[in-house]
Length: 137
Image (cartoon, rainbow, N blue to C red; front, side):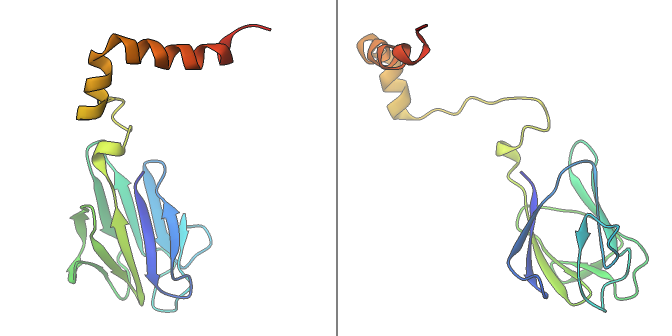
């Protein structure tokens, strides 16, 4: 799940999960992410999920929006990016492989799981151990 970790502000260490298409950030209580700093504009920036990537847009804030040290108006976000809004520092985390927004599921396997699947006795044992939990009483 995409998320912001607030590092430097009065809310340091807070994790905010990004849900929905638009995530507004600012000092106003109307925002999805509220930052308590006089250096943050009431409506400072917005993070937009466009179906393919996350994009942060500065909303003509007084002190600007910075991604990895560069002032930006519009910027595609990548996993691990550092954001500065006013006096607040945040990190953006997004593991695309673990995200199910696309509706696609991917099969993750390991050599141990493949070895177990190749051995019918192990697979049968696994099913036998789980089966009693699903039997009617």
